[in-house]
Amino acid sequence: MANKSGSLHVVMFPWLAFGHFIPFLELSKFIAQRGHKVSFISTPKNIDRLPRIPPEFASSITFVKIPLPPVDGLPENVEATVDLGGLDVAVLKKAYDGLEPELTRFLEYSAPDWIIYDFAPYWIPPIAAKLNISKSFFCIFSAASMAFFVRSVDAMIAGTDPRTKVEDFTVPPKWIPFESKLAFKLYESRWVVQGQNLEGSGVSDSYRVGSAIKDADVTLIRYCPEFEGQWLKLLEDLLKRHVIPLGLMPPPVEKSIVENNESWIAIKDWLDGQGKGSVVYVALGSEVSLNQLQLSELALGLELSGVPFFWALRNPSGLPEGFEDRVKGRGIVWKNWAPQLNVLSHDSVGGFLTHCGWSSSIEGLMFGHPLIMLPFVADTGLIARMLEEKQVGIEIPRNDVDGSYTSHSVANSVRLIMVENEGKIFKDKAKEISAIFGDQDLHDSYLHKCVDYLENKRHESK
Image (cartoon, rainbow, N blue to C red):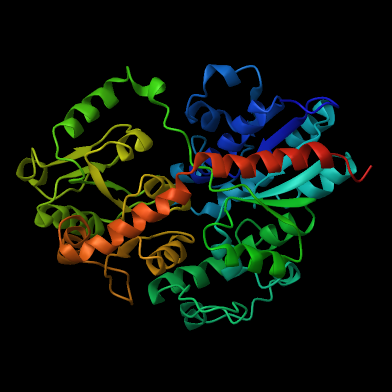
């Protein structure tokens, strides 16, 4: 219910990526559920692509469309990282920074109580401070991933990370005081070091994140103390700031939204025909773009495994010749939209081959599915190491130099998790951890505490 002193108006401003939109949208729904008004701001194309919200939130959540300004090198139809193809993400960040004038005008006109923003808009805190708007940085990354990168806020802003060589990222940081295997593989470390040097937007990610944290009134993070609580404590110590855990925010399975959807009806019909726990669900997220060799080896590995599979693959061009005919009946390549939560919640699914995005990992583990992990981008390698330490899944073995994998390594990993006796420990651990990941009441309790904080601390600086 609303605060006695009146309902809040909260502005949400996520970065232009679907892995960011969805957590921001879930938080928006919870804030609205508590009787507050939310303005969710993004570009027209992105807002049109968001999942439909339940009717009860229609009057509380307003979607505000602000077009991206023209930027050299950025085609008109590119409004999110998923649209980039081979383009440099720095161009998109430059366009995103160009939203500052329009966003400022919106804030001046609407005078919200809070703005909750992502890592990229380093320019929001001074604007909010000038307009006397309370401000919060919402970190959608895991506490472990953040602790790996953040030695201190000031070091991030100054760009003085002592790690400058590829090898530096293949070992846990010296500031982690407890035993951990959290580190990048050699091929991932190359991506990290290259990324440090890509500042085509004119502003480094390190500066963006450091500024977002330093000038926020509070930092929110999608994490909970019940799972690896030492990482949350370490992050607070490193940041020297108050960090509010939001829980893991497991999304609800909205069966009513898909029950009459033709795609879901066809998917469910196929899943209903499979044995309980026999199917491995394969999905690598919206940001991963496999090259020809990676796609072929993954496909051939699934074929070689002999395990039933449901593969959500929006761009299937380049599959091995005759692949779909050879696996017909046992495996299916779904080329349209697939409701991931509904698939994962189906009784026939018993494992999840995933890229280890934090959202996807949470969704797989909330249903107790062991993970077959194939990380590619951002912090997914770190998430894979963390989850492998918890024995809730295994990584597909890869060449440490170039990150390549073979059909045999895919097949062996799938079989180990899905059919072999050695996979029992991973199934048991995943089932055990689902008691935390799938505990809606637990995670809602953290969200309630967060909204209580927003209600009690608004305009505290006035």
